[in-house]
Amino acid sequence: MNFSPIIYEVLKTLWWFIPMMLFLAFLGSPKFKGILGEALVKVTAWLRLPSKTYHALHNVTLPTPDGTTQIDHIFVSCFGIFVVETKNMKGWIFGGEKQKQ
Image 1 (tube, rainbow, N blue to C red):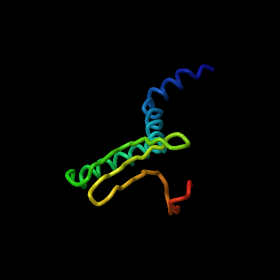
Image 2 (image 1 turned 90 degrees about the vertical axis):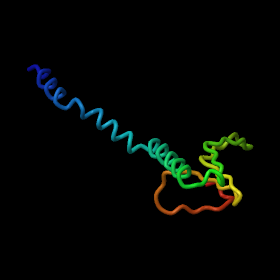
Image 3 (image 1 turned 45 degrees about the vertical axis):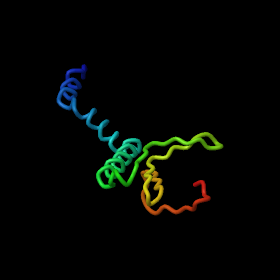
Image 4 (image 1 turned 180 degrees about the vertical axis):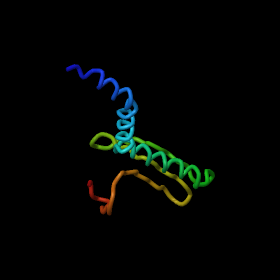
């Protein structure tokens, strides 16, 4: 028995389903959440921090003895230097200044 007409009719009716599922999977991916989180910090800082007081630097790469490291956001002001690293994590985060992880 030839199932191609049946498969064709089902695919013709649900042609939008596969692209929609791929799009939803992309929205739930860590890469998308990271991009969205960094963009939200950037836009919020632009809207809320006065530009005369705070100078923002984004995606700064610094050399280290092991290679390089990347910092998401640095805000320089007369009040100090604020370094912000954006992560997609849940729960409590503990650490000290000398800890690598």
